[in-house]
Length: 236
Image (cartoon, rainbow, N blue to C red):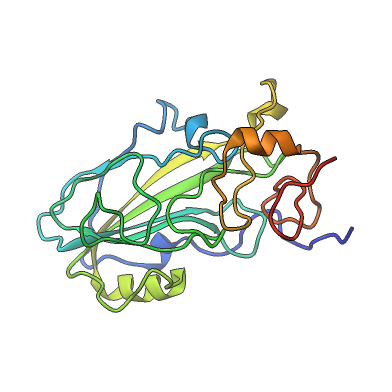
């Protein structure tokens, strides 16, 4: 099996490091998905229930819209793994509800657009650090905007969004959550989800368990269970 040449960690900057608010102002963020030490609960991991986390923040009075980018710079790839892209959150909002629909235009946030994560799917992609890769840091970066982003559709990539944020951001904030594969540090192994392959990356855990997870693919950047070309988990 071919080996990949991915770096141990991403060497690229996070979005918030590339977008400077004018004038520089901060936003305070919080999420019930994080415990007191900042660890993201297993329920929000793609290894487990893959729930969509909620997020709240301090209001920016002048904001006409908000945008959210969640990235993992510890991913073993050239750029941070994008876990969530969401923009045109209403300027009157001070929270994203837990369980937000994974659709291009989630009904819970009228007018908002949800982009595709690094797995090619709309909405949140649960935490899924590679086995034995240590603690990963997930940056929930929120940007207050002077106007909504009107020229981007749900298929827009991160670079398109960054370009728009550079001209509209008036305040920003960064909440950092951590996550690590716990079955390698004493916990019982999880059957979990493979995620990121095929048209139904959030398939039922029991169905995946019945097909068998097996070991890891050496050429798989996100270290998913072995899979066939059609995305099904391969039997061992």
